[in-house]
Image 1 (cartoon, rainbow, N blue to C red):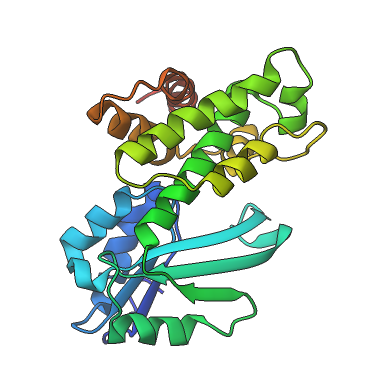
Image 2 (tube, rainbow, N blue to C red):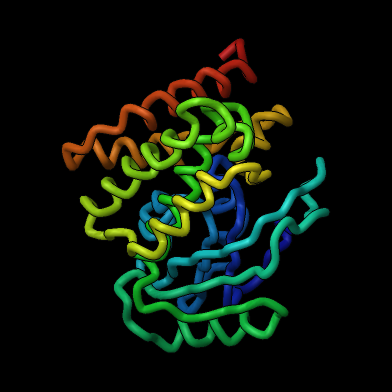
Length: 250
């Protein structure tokens, strides 16, 4: 527990909402020593700069975890929506290090697929494009994929959002592979699909949305490359209004 950490840990596994990152860093910092590896599984990529500034880039791995699950009010996972779960880790510069291998050895063999990636940043961008696309789509329309594609124009909206996200990723130097674009396109245009996003579920259940780290940061990076993202700008504005409504006195 926070406040009871003593001595350096081998691996710090970090999987919190981005809004809780600063507090999490304060909580686990006493456990970080010269050989500790921090393995974050957060959405987007902005957290890498924050963690690297605090602990040094060699100590902070990139990570991608794939799991669809729902939690209860206490944060416990109560439903896994789609097996299997998998994770990948790698150094930010793509090199293989002893600390990376040691982290992999500790995280593998836990009942889900684990791997080391030499291109973990590219994989993080690919996941970011996917979750940002489906998050913007379902939050803008307040419905599942099936609900959206069932109305006139709904079939075209998802691919238009995906085009914005993939253009930003490509401009940043991480083009999304064609097969991933095709797979995402199928996911966001499937008639009758019950697919939703965790961001949309957060909104439906009255929790804050990770709009700044998932949608706004993508749009901001796009603007830096001269990429226009009107659909992401709209989704960002909508969710900022929603988040502000949770704390009207601020």
